[in-house]
Length: 516
Image (cartoon, rainbow, N blue to C red; front, side, top):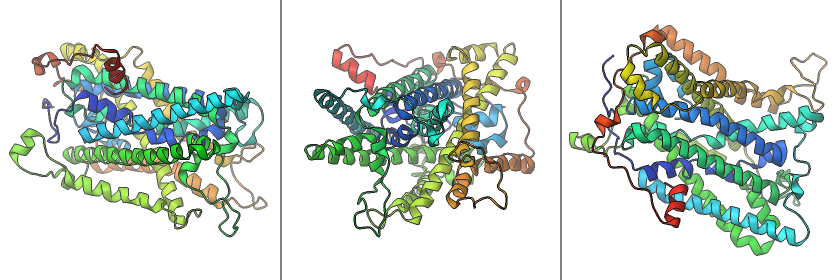
């Protein structure tokens, strides 16, 4: 296989690290923090949701360090798409299709950081006020776990803890951004591993603090959305999605004096959603571009504007076809708009089904990345004598404990995918139901729909995987046949690189830790 060029992406423009870090931490998935912690709080209780997020964080760590090690060696190999082609099998690429901008994202990051800071500070204020009226911060932690689906005993508490995983995974989606845009980061081979670890540490700390506070400011019963009956004039008038946000529920319960904070928080959450959407367009466009360049998607997705040699050399081009396609699919989100304030229409339900399937597909892309790393790691061991110099460069960025972390994360992701919809086969008394008899009550329609949305991505994945192998007759790359030529050596490619000096002042160090 020919040596990969240092930069194979005409969209490369050498992004600065602060923009990369802030884009990953604050401009990507903090919408999950604002709106996505309500249902897990109900399912698992305050301590159960905390344990669930911490456990999911350990799974994400394995994925982050695995992908960072690979892209540090081949920063311009078109992301995980190129890595799967080179070290596993081109047929694996469909597994990585679960997800179909620089300075402006730093602005969005500041807005989101402000939103997080505002909500956390107000939560502390509410806790302090509750203490004055003889209500301690741990009041709502009793009991610490919930009995999931009213299943009694330790089994019900464990299942509540397990129910947190999919939402926690959704909240961590985006931690792999540095690996996706490695070809656009200056001196990526030297910095990408540290950048990825910093992103993971910050997201973990942010969720850890936030989840603890969520459990202290509002009882789980208050987050349960009210049942809305449009024909009843006394029915609740607000069924908005943010009504399930524990932070906003706490502010609403605090009274009219906090209305200003509630309105400000809603505005910041809307900005957060816009930021997340722009980042998804950014990433999806690049995936389509990578797929087209690798021959796995129509070549039209590789078209850029302006299509001039000077623009390509300067890296100031836009893959406009991919942008239009991605924005077009993103417009489906408007299906979630309600015709009336308290009526959830059919289009909104359809969009929720699409969202559920997207989450499963995204998790499948993690499975593909982790499996690629396991094969990649095996290749470095088998080929060490042939590619001694290249593999020494690779091992510079190898995390302690590999390949344990990759195998652990791969196993957990597979288990989450398989048992994500287990509750569909469970009645309220905890009895497992595999099939129904003619005398059994009819299976609820909603259960059928949930089953399809939870598990349809799995057979689709298998069909794409083996369909590609059947049509293209591709073969898995053997460990002793892997080609490690072209590993990027930062000492040669970036000899003139000048590392940015960290700040020396107190506030400078605080800002560097939070954003840079």
